[in-house]
Image 1 (cartoon, rainbow, N blue to C red):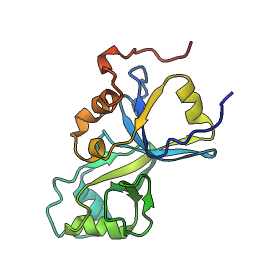
Image 2 (tube, helix red, strand yellow):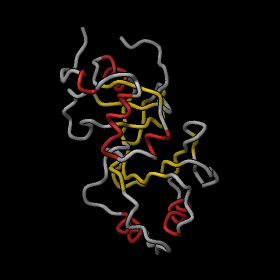
Image 3 (spheres, one colour):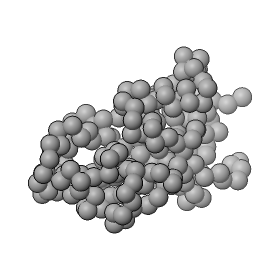
Image 4 (tube, rainbow, N blue to C red):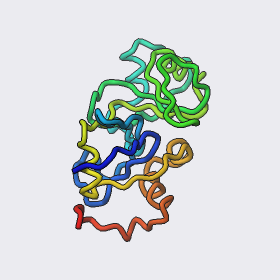
Length: 188
């Protein structure tokens, strides 16, 4: 039975090596909501394999006013795969911005997307298509089964480290050597 809920909003959900689901293998998910009704997060260490920023802006009929070729589009998760989510630092004045931590917000309104296209975005941001989601009690069961470990969310890991180093960095931030983690999931 699941004990009292401790919200993971603002924390990292780090996939254990034994999690072989291709949607989440070696992922770091920044949790944007977690309550009795379920949980939501954005995978921060997967660049979308096929979609580029220009394709997103073209689909939205937004003409880029700056070079957007260096703006990666992340695969934020398998839920709502066509919905755009922006994790960002200050400023936080965009429509529909939700503060996740004192330094990171989640937005998905057209005004921030237009600002990114115009080169007027927050200095640090991450564009994602889709999100990760769990129904009521689902994430708690997965945590009980040692599918995931959690750590404090870090704007530095989200915005400053290269995508391919974020999983290892999130684990090392816990004082754990990733090589020492077991590929086996489960609980004793």
